Length: 64
Image (tube, rainbow, N blue to C red; front, side, top):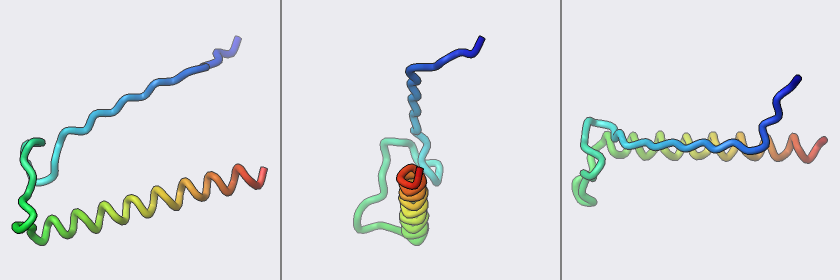
C-alpha cells in the first residue's frame, strides 16, 4: 500500500561563516577585502542561478 505525505516541514539552520569568523563578527564597511568582493560575486551568481531554475520550473508548469 503506498504512503501519501500530505505535509512536509524542512528546517535548515546555517551558522558557519567563510574564513573561520564566528557568526557574530562581520567585516566593517570600510575594511572590505578582495575575499569579500569574491564572496559577493559568488553570492550574486548563486542568486542568478536560483532565479533561472525557478523561472524554468514555472515555464515548465505553464506548458503542461
